[in-house]
Image (cartoon, rainbow, N blue to C red; front, top):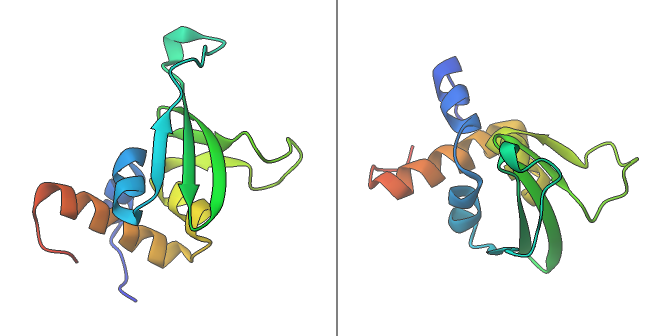
Length: 113
């Protein structure tokens, strides 16, 4: 795998979650009936299906958590697209960075890294 520069890691971490989901071919649908506790934070709930598994995420800026896991679960949530990709795919940090950068590049029409 490729080593990543700090700027590439920062860029990968900020990729929108929807781009990662689209790139992975995951089904995702926003729950328009969701009412966040604090509307000013802009949180949304998204139903996700990926590789036969179901997820229900609350997304707030770069933070996320999987509502379907118990509150005591150590990997219930995280911050940024790299953690998000790792949660969905159960892959390494290096591969998650590649997924995020490839998702970003596929959106912008640039060649994949």
